[in-house]
Length: 114
Image 1 (tube, rainbow, N blue to C red):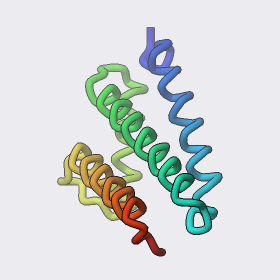
Image 2 (image 1 turned 45 degrees about the vertical axis):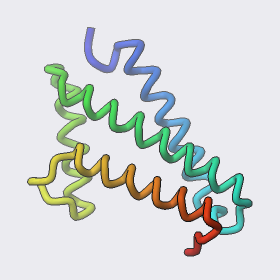
Image 3 (image 1 turned 180 degrees about the vertical axis):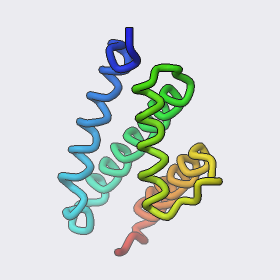
């Protein structure tokens, strides 16, 4: 069975897609959301980030050529965003998680502003 035929991987990718859609559909509304809605949005963003990190770990550990192709695509996308090739993606995910936690803390303190 190929990597992408796995029911677990397919379910994870479907959930990532749903979370991405929810995040993208509300991103421009974020400044005008209530505090509770902002916190909910940040929680969705955090779940998305966790799912993406798990999927990246799975493709990194897989010998499947399609999984390795996906990993290369992720690394190329990161490079196009200015992330040096020498940076480990786990560091990128950790920094992104820290940013999400900082955003959440600012919302909690009513200090969020764009």
